[in-house]
Image 1 (spheres, each protein chain N blue to C red):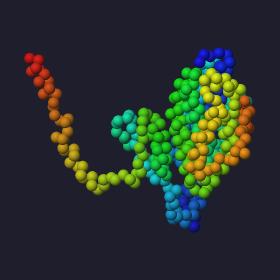
Image 2: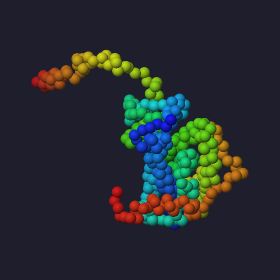
Image 3: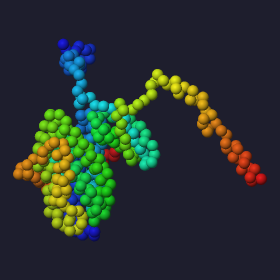
Image 4: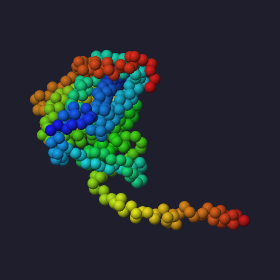
Amino acid sequence: MIIKSLDPRISRAQIDDQSATEELKPLDHFETYEVFHQKKRGTHHQHVGTVHAPNPEMALLFGKEQFGRRGVCVNIWVVRSADIFASDYDDSDIFATTPEKQYREATPYKVMDKINEYKAKQGA
Amino acid sequence: MNLNEQNTLALKELLYKMADDLLILGHRNSEWTGIGPMLEEDISFSSMAQDKLGQALALYQLLHELGENEPDTVAFTRNDNQFHSCQLVEYPIGEYDFSLIRHFLFDNAELIRYELLSESSYEPLAKLARKFVGELKYHKFHGDTFVMQLGKGTEESKKRMQASLNASWNLALGIFENSPYEDLLIEEGIWKGEDFLKLRWLEAVQPIIDEAGLQIPDDSNWAPVNGGRTGKHTEHLQPLLDEMTEVFRVDPGAEW
């Protein structure tokens, strides 16, 4: 049976609906790779995006042109997306109280006041 | 190196053929923009085509400094018989296997060519060559990776790569067509010459072709397609030039 669609472009293609159930072979579908690039030696690699590729060499090849061709870059990493072990969005509540823990950050401390006070004392 | 009448002629001949190769192949490869086999590859191939046009411009600029016309005039106002590009670069893009094999064979030669030129006694050229080498390393990496990938891919991909390799081989040998100034260029230390490049190129492509499971045509069948360097071209070059120069001819003074 041929797929019926309101879109003439699909009807014209005469797609046999049996073909849609065929299993994908390895080469029919590339894996995704996450691309990280480094702006300067010694700095962190930063995630810049994703490419489709059949293997790491090709991912590197594509990653360079997709994300390294503009702007400065000295090094690229590619990692199979499937190899990334990630937290679950259902568990996002593990981060929920983080904004309340400002005492862990240095920013709220009004340290400059104390320094200026000290300097003033020294000068006197 | 001090420029004199004779070595300037030799240098110009060298620069013209290198720049013309880059302009013509850069234009050809850009024809894949938007219709490449997959998004990532479309972008990569187009980006390399732009690199080639940029390199061509830099060489035409160098020629201009040696007294030739402006780069735009040189690029857009000559007929096919005034181009010194080898015939390999003017062939239509064909199917992707042909474009890939051509790029693989050509860019392996380009990388070695510009590595050799990095040590040229003509310092402005050596300086440019050192700049090109980085881009060309990627072009070679791209070509090598694709040839190995598709050579080891499916029956069909292997068959296609082999057929294109057979069809391109003698054209690729035409890259190394000797110039009348070959000895002078070597003597003056401008570079080591086409024959030396050809040997180094064979050493570079052989292991990749082996690794890919493909075969270089038997050397009893080698017959370099020469003529391009002296302005003899196939029927494919002039239509390319007509298309490339269309806008220029409508408005030669247009600013971009």
